[in-house]
Length: 104
Image (tube, rainbow, N blue to C red; front, side, top):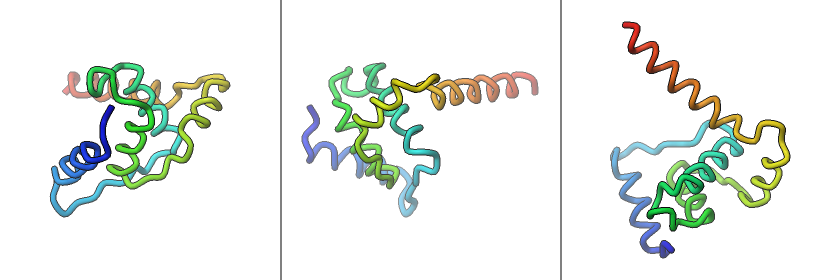
């Protein structure tokens, strides 16, 4: 479990990576929530020990966005026909970028 102090230090180190520049999430909140849950499901932070709420709080602080109730939003996502639409689109865009680079 990440303490608030650790979360704050981690967030400051991320935002200090480019001094004087703040980054803002410009896609939908649901896209951010899919990303947060994807990171959680993959166990990509703290060997899989970071909780959803902690990851969401870090994302909110880092990208200056209010995700609202991520648990409720995730419940709604699960009922959608394609609950991973953003992640699927991101994968396709990354693969296209790689193909485009290879064709140069």
